[in-house]
Length: 329
Image (tube, rainbow, N blue to C red):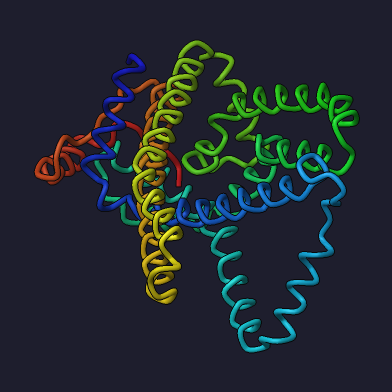
């Protein structure tokens, strides 16, 4: 099965079953977009007030901590509500992505086998801890982690120390990319084969090395598609962002309450649209890798229902002839 056929089947699954799968992709994306926005705002503010762009200023946490403490002492009830919301958000950001990722993997494989997706959420719940551990392991070598460390070195110790540390950061980035590539199929072994974390990593490395050409083709193809999706999201968001800028410009003319309400609605719309688009891409990319895993690990041909009307016939055929690919629960 060619890579383009896998991608085509994955897109069919995404289109046909989007209503069933959209929550498993969009809800984690919702938290990720918010955290990414806060992180980007923090990095912008940190660099803006660092000695690199504001000579004489020191990029430390003291002014920000003083401002937070002043707000806490003057708004105790608001602080309590903010703490509860922050804890709930933190729990959602940490707990939901591994659960929904495992659910999405199981659901796509069930669709591939022409089974109903009932029980996929249970699989995601059962696989939370190994997927959480896998995320911590791969996140240690992630681009975001290395960027955070590099920006911290640049702001606090200057260009000279940064250029000394840069070769090490580049080396770790290369190692991280290699590790991420070799661990491509680990989470699918965890969810679909009930393998342990170490066993899944071992099997993933073996599967990648024995199918190096096909895996790297899919890897590069998904990387290009991901870049295009990001560009499309940016283009889609340019118009609302322009409206936000115009609203800020004309805020002195109209009531500040009206302007803040409009900006809040536009901001919420931006958040929902971007979460949906990134969630859609996550569903599609998961389908691509699940079908690739099915082809390589089980040497089968990926099958996908073409429309919602064909699903009942497909399920009937499955009951009559058995699944194309079996996996342990």
